[in-house]
Length: 111
Image (cartoon, rainbow, N blue to C red; front, side, top):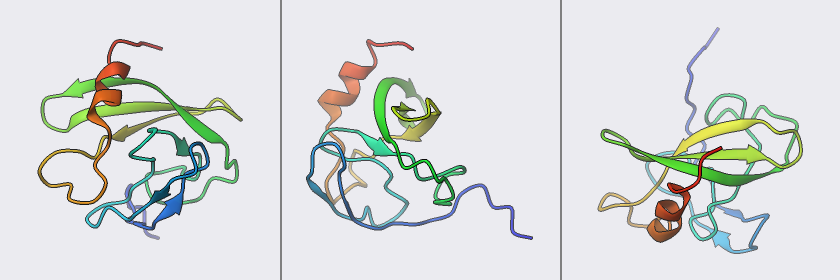
């Protein structure tokens, strides 16, 4: 049985919150919109797309991590689940980088 904690599922999608077209990241799974930072509750483990919830996930706060950059925390508006996700920005992100100003604004919030 395969117990990998991360599964790469890098597909484009239309954001359920702002309606913008989001392109695949190209090197890892993109799970949130780079424009509004909202996500959709699709995963139980990163990239597995095993959740039946499907609720929109609001970005509630972000924290800087010296090795991973910013880590965003999303809360599902349907079931309340809380998930962490690495922000996608910087020189390695060539396609639709996350809005760094919005990420930084989230660092002032705490849940």
